[in-house]
Length: 232
Image (spheres, rainbow, N blue to C red):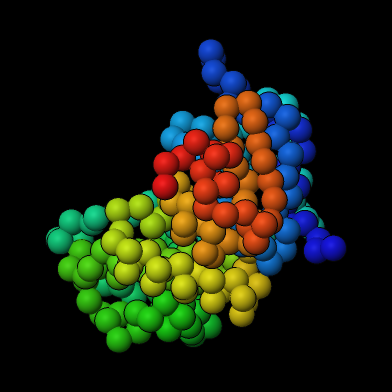
């Protein structure tokens, strides 16, 4: 059996007058491609924030293996249509995840940026201003920025929302390749059930007060629709 990267045990998260999770249990296994599905408001983003340590659970625990500090996490947000005047080139934008407050990169870091750009098919347009490229290219730049430090876990927070079908599949094909060739564990939050079915290996379906975890090979899109109340 594959070793877990993260084990969520009896997780409870509550806010005043709102209990988001109660007794939530699942593992994120090393090398898995796990999709989290459910209707709006069921707590998908709250779960991401808990995994990132931005929210403290009110019950249960989240265990990281070998430790939380040892796991590098890459994060790709929902599509953000940056203004055309956004000053950074794609290459500079990707390098932000390495520079911190430094204005320079080491030779090794420059190679990391070059690799991330190549993997996401952005090398030829790396000097273009990010605000002037297409929506799909912007989102691939976010992916490149997320993977430039070679994370063990890649979180996609509805990252294909607002992209057209061609761009969605282009982005997810890149993510799938990273999962298969680099063994990067993927945590993919989406309301898009056909997309989840095509790319993920396991699913975590969330409904108020309920959860269902399983292998996607055993589920049809219609069955996923039934367990999530999400319209396809």
